[in-house]
Length: 108
Length: 108
DNA sequence: ACCAGTACTCGGTATCACCGAGTACCACTA
DNA sequence: TAGTGGTACTCGGTGATACCGAGTACTGGT
Image (cartoon, rainbow over all chains, first blue to last red; front, top):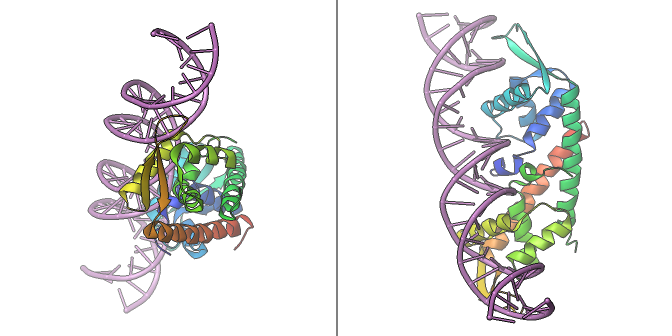
């Protein structure tokens, strides 16, 4: 699949929120997870900028812990504001994707 | 529904292509159509920038015609390149939206 | 000592939807 | 005939976002 970056704008951050909401995790692992999910071209730098933004916006709780296989990891977990933002994201997604699907089915 | 602009990036252009693909039409009417479809906050300026981009990228055929109710209209129709681009857009949309829905269902 | 894999930071870029101000055409009415 | 409202398009500039590239740094194995 060719370049998806424009279409991911506004949704990738929500995907990262969802992944963090599922379990406490860290940037490198989130990137791998996104790649597995089919977003093969999403790269570490992109995920880290999202994580820094989430932190700046007070949507996550951060804890630095040592790792046995490399440098320390910054673990992210959703706080209450993050869970609310995630709910808003899915509401928006449902709204937008249903309208687009309707348009696609020739909805008039 | 609150602000959708970020989520529409990369998809709004495709929606415009789809609308033009359905029938030859013009900017003002496309905006009204998008508003009806649920994209209530999409404004004329946005649609016109998309139309100019489509024209610049050689995806549409343009014809200026007089109107009985106002200034002349620029009618847009897809050419072959536009139809190909539209097909690519829907392929991307299907790909991305299915992955995101899977993530939403807790797909692991 | 070197290297591969892991893990994060940061300055800069391109693209896109949006905004605002401007131009202009037409029909209707006071 | 001047004004108003609806129609229709243009263009310079803004902000948000994903991406890029270079850099830093820790660990374990050869």
